[in-house]
Image (cartoon, rainbow, N blue to C red; front, side, top):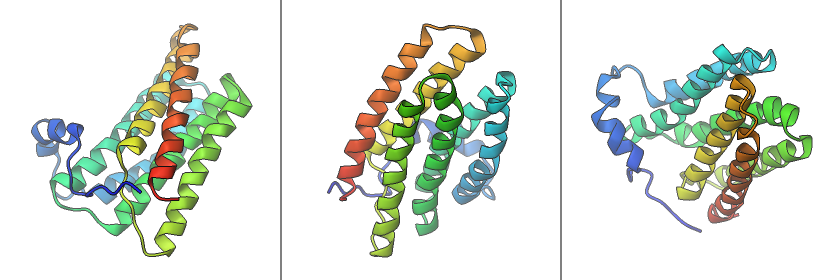
Length: 192
């Protein structure tokens, strides 16, 4: 199992330390950002389901960005909590998994979309069992890379649907396939 110090900074933390984080008021907590993502996920799904991409795609990008933001806030402001360590990745998986169900299943392939969701469910179950054993494992490089690739793959697909760039569909499938590889690696590096 690969253990990572949850306080260790990622490269995007350093970038956010000097750009956006100083602009965010102290009363906005990392856990509050995670809860916001949970609350707004159904809103994004609604707009994407209705194919209102002019609203749904920017909201998708905003929520995807909150994934990086809440972790950076927690690490940079020393506000890492057991609640956030468990629910931030859960919120990410619910967010990306539900978007995959709405967009990838509908516009690419049902089996491909279900495979992505199945891997996410496996990771959630692994985290649940680790938590019941008293172990909380922070995200690692493979999990962070997986989430980035998933967001990128869904973004390519959304651009294809929104702007009519059909060339982005195979690029989306390739990126999401690579994300599946990183998801499986992250599943095993978490110690399952």
